[in-house]
Amino acid sequence: MCDCCDGSDEMHAKHSKCSNTCESAGAEWRAAEAERIRVAEAGARAKLAYMDQAKAALSDAEGTKAELSAKQTSAEQQLAVAEEQLAAAERQAEADALQQHSSDSHKVLRGLSLDGASAEDLGTLLVQLARTVNGGAKALAKLAEGAALKRGVEQKDLIKINWPTDVPDDLVSAPKAEAVKSAEAAILAAKSDLREAKDALADLESKQAKDYGPSNAFFPLDGKCVELRQAQYTYKVCPFGSAKQDHTLLGNFEGFQDSYTTMRFTNGQTCWNGPARSLTVKLVCGVEEVLSSVDEPSKCEYTATLATPAVCDDRFARPIDTELVKEEL
Ligand code: MAN
Image (cartoon, helix red, strand yellow):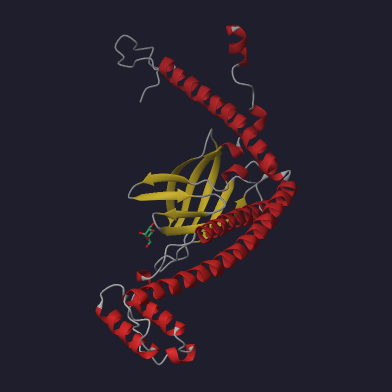
């Protein structure tokens, strides 16, 4: 080991194999220091942006909630209207189908010259036909039913006729009426608007109740996740959410510790013969969220480091290269 800077090698300078590393060591230190300052400044600027995001989302939360409630009410009203329209359209479609059906049956009967046959004979005939004709059985049964009704058989007597039952419905389902289709589409749209408004309202209310640290600087981390592939595992940490090692739950976000310099995730998957897994995340200043150095110092108790602008010192936030900009101008 030789640093070549303390003068001890100078006595034998001629024969010394020591080369002077001061310059390269100094350059390395200066580069590291410049990088540290760059991160501190860029991180601080990013933190100001985080604080602004939080302010925009939270400071007028009551106003936003009122807007969302109004959206919810209007979606509920639209849904009620669309449901009424659907019921009316379905009633109309059913009436149209019945009318169509009875006029069709009549035409067929006339066509087959069977309009003089007795209702029972007609029923039996058509049911037999329905059983033997592949595919259109239910349609034919309906036809028979319509014809029988038309010829004076009472509804209560119809059940005495042995209608075929093993016919899939879709063989007889007529195309949907346009009015039914459009009412159904309106219901879907209103339901989706309603869900959207409800979700946004619930999301905002839950965010209002959370602790996002001084100046709410941690706000933009809510909903973000950071991953790190290390050894055989992929670690995934979602601040305010949960932390995982592949599919194993390391813990759910419990809160901050040590003046917002640490996050704790607890109540993870229980370790075989050990505690429930937990994770302590050390927070350091960085330009963006980067997860590093996951460790397991004690069985199923994990540690990690998360870089984030949220913990940078915003007093370092100087405008980017003002001097340079001035010079360039
Ligand atoms: C898995 C991983 C490890 C942990 C053991 C404990 O292999 O979660 O990190 O130490 O289980 O059995």
